[in-house]
Length: 294
Image (cartoon, rainbow, N blue to C red; front, top):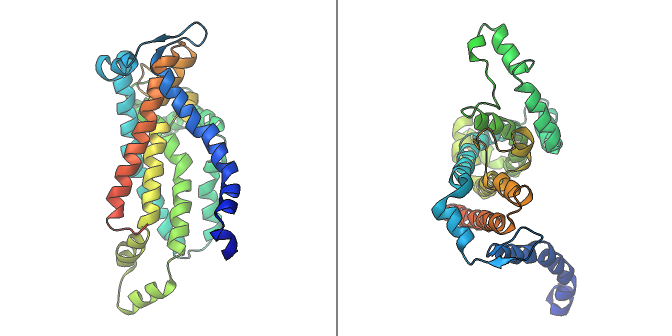
């Protein structure tokens, strides 16, 4: 094996199929999108080169409410990091301490991750239904009928309602990553801390969380970039409405390309999403790399 690892030709031979697949599926589409973003093209007729006009429409003219869609994705990212990840971290720390039925709870929390997003979207649409939804039904049964709402049809509550569904779907995913990291910490460290009189809360903040920083960095990256790339659940539940209140760049890009047939303008949105995710990933890793040895 050691001899094989030193053979550069063998390394190239085994790595080439993966590199070729990555180039065809990821790299080439990015370059095609970059080229299309400089065109005015409906996907059928002859294209017209417009230079950076599509980007000007995005950032200067703010056509089609692009700024609002970016704002919505930033709100989702902040809420994901500020609410979703702390809940996942709390569940991971509790489960990693060896509670009863640990395997059962770990499986239950992860179930939403493996359910189809379309199914989850339909499920939460039923929960939020104005007439027979369980949420309004419970509110009315508790005498809080005044709080009953058209959750997905109200621009003030639609984005928050969609986020609750996203939180329910992915909190188990981050929990499992953090749980695996917490379980990998040596029990001897906790035993020494107990001998010194450390409480469970002190061990969590002084031992568990600091030693979990590498996986916390990964989870933050996944949460932020996942919010920027969020599409399927939002599209199923609201389609970006009402009044663009739940529109994010991906849903706006989809409707721009496949409903309005503005391939050049939609490709400019795609390039923005790619750059946004890359920049945020680099920034997050820089912030964590001060204390983490990668």
